[in-house]
Length: 113
Image 1 (cartoon, helix red, strand yellow):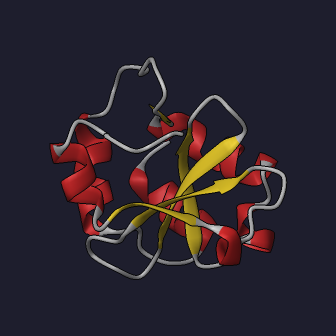
Image 2 (tube, one colour):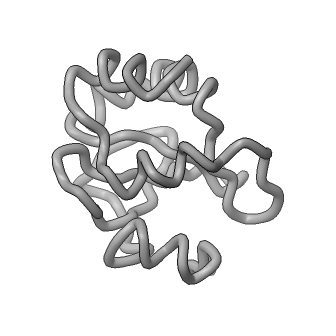
């Protein structure tokens, strides 16, 4: 599995800030933020039907509590949001951080209350 496979699955480029992160993201994370490894992205997005219910977004991980972290495709450094796995409806998303790169720099901080 590589980035080209992910872009082929979504039929568009994934954000450059996220691509850069993926290139160095090789170990599973623990805690309230679990970002999927490259080899799990298609399976997780297929499982939650991201292309159907959140078209134009990629599900990049979850909080272990039934919510998905999503970012918009088609932007270099998109805003990070969270949405319930049950709906995957971007109109119901909640703000996490103004850009993916800022979220990484913050150590993946978000208010999970």
